[in-house]
Length: 353
Image 1 (cartoon, rainbow, N blue to C red):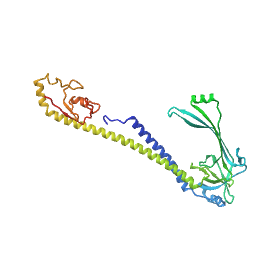
Image 2: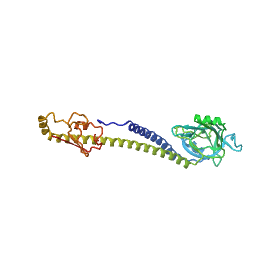
Image 3: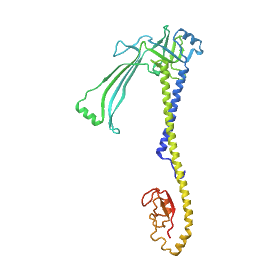
Image 4: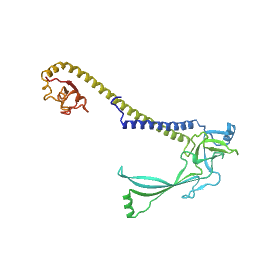
């Protein structure tokens, strides 16, 4: 590609779109695998028949199954610190700091937050069916899905003196306060569990993270909602992958269009050179005779305005100026007349006797 090169922004845009498209497609395939596993997972009811089903299953394991039950602690439950009448089996405390930080780029205050402290308390619990059959939930902290409920949210806003406020504005960092959040999985909540069902050594029913690394779910929503949420995530990853691929294709098309224009200009230049050479050859005999007759006058007052050496031997159209030689015309950085700066549409040989 003589005389043509891909610009740095074009290379960066194409490479970034290609990389993002690959990442988004990988995330889409990963989430699509989760959706396919969910759609193929059997739904089982928590009752005595479930124990018999597992006993009849090779290895006494259902590798990926869906159950629904009511949360009940194995022994003692956890009590909320803000509401003494609320009890649960899983409790989360989060302390966040909110600050206003001045952004020199946008010339505005930006709200930022960071987690200062996080604590999780959990006690063993069951998912209980209608006939009081219980399935013990193992490793609930490894589960995905929304299964806790915010029961307390309190914002502590500090008071500052005038001098402190002035210092904060000058430093560009203003603390807004601290947010305390308490979440809990309450006793009596209906929970959807999706994972591996087993019978332990003592013959108890247990739900645990799948041994084949499939995604483990505990959700307060029903199974259809869980499937829909994961399907939407997979759809958006697919959309982003397609958009990134289209952006890369657009960059590639733009480069191809530039290359086509480059080839077209080069072809037109070659055609123009050939046409000019042909027309110039027709006047070569007359020019040679004139140079032999008056060698000192051939260039007098007819020098190229660019090189001041060669005679003016071409006429620029559409403006009609005769101001340069053909060699200098070919060296022009832009096809514009050196005299009037109009665009040069065509060039013809010019002979002045």
